[in-house]
Length: 296
Image 1 (cartoon, rainbow, N blue to C red):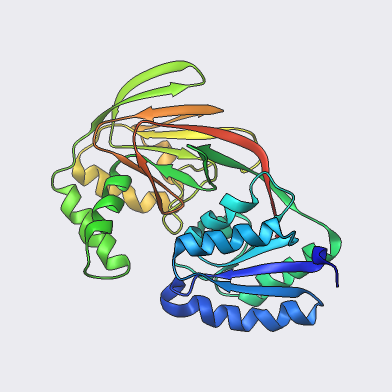
Image 2: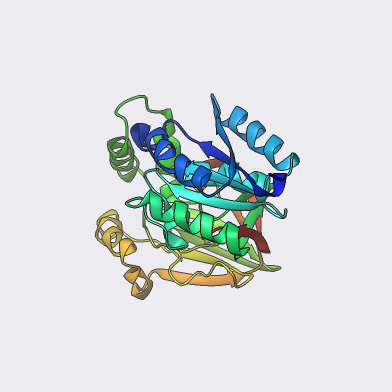
């Protein structure tokens, strides 16, 4: 069998509290029964996983298929973006926002595997844009406000695990959080404002279905820059549930801009995208059109 019919299956063993490995064992026979040669890869940590994926792409595999959540998808992006190698997604994490955006669900991993097999057989690819900053790519949303501060605090906490850690971090930050002064550069136009939250969306959602960048499209060559202007803490809490429905866009403190290249600066904020830490602001993010082929 030629190397063009070989795929790398990269699994996050910690995804979904161990669900990643169980899902891998479920879908692996499906790929092999379709006549594919499968390199089943598990890294001891993110760095090793990245090295394994990069080596597979260098060897000419047709696709890198990731089993996990948005963090594992983000890792896969780094080695497949702007290359002929396709990315396949078997959602098995907590958030799965990238998978959800391309129509995949965690509930049915075999359906995701079937779509990958079919796309490999037909040559079909869903083309999508990516966002890039500092040489790293992301697919969903760059959090650069209150949500990013919560993520940063949660990463310093050893207890509890899972979603409760983020709930406690949210409560801790909510007591002291105040609007930050932001400077935005939108395709060369400077905007100065105060905001509770700024998010730069390539796709519409992050954080397990929070549709902060409602209306963002994966193939329009643009980034959606969402601003939540100052509001009370109670107002922020009341608005939060609307993010799951995307109805926050009618709130008077909501503002949206669209640009190909964005620089965002604010004191005391570390940017997070696809759930991964990207680094302190200021950050410059650019849209990279048609950067990725997804097997979906």
